[in-house]
Length: 303
Image (cartoon, rainbow, N blue to C red):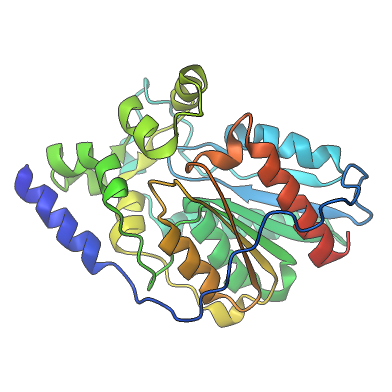
């Protein structure tokens, strides 16, 4: 309904946060240009990565993990419970009521297990989109047990605006046609909406379709929380260095949100790449992001 659409705009705007004055200047992604980054790292390091809505990290991060494993990192992708039903299948109805807190509880368990099973390893948390806000919260919970955090086009925590008309347009199918009933139901996203919100014209139609057909049903409650009821994060308890990466043409996470996230944390480094929300996993442009992450980790953790 049209009424629901305008109501959603009101709620969306109301969820916007303040504008910080402590915004770091983004740097050029050439942190260690000229140094040999093909050599394997000298320390034991475990990369634990978390994905965005509609994604299974074990699939999304496949090429990402292969790159870092070739350099000596160990990598684990954390798939969330019940996020394994492709769009052409029928999802479990109870998925619709899964919350961000449920995902966080599961993530805490997985990270605790991986820390205990990898004694002596440096712990690096990586989060894309929804996974970014989960990782920020994990940084608060685990404190100095986490050695580094990398955020990729991260969703915003409480107090930071995530409003954009392009983001709103991406989810118009839910906001207009399904009123607000979707917030307690499993939700999916059409190919048209995904192409508009996640990709750009440098992603081939074939790659876009293949990525979309591997997406999975998500919790409507979690989507609602990401828009209107965000997770709070106590930034004073996040003590490790953080790399915040944004995409200049991201239609889901505006650049202002990425600036604000970087400004929230004392030990953050902010980098922007030209590209869409999907950039870190793009076949052709992803490697420049991976190279930058590796170079930053080598510098910050003396790998």
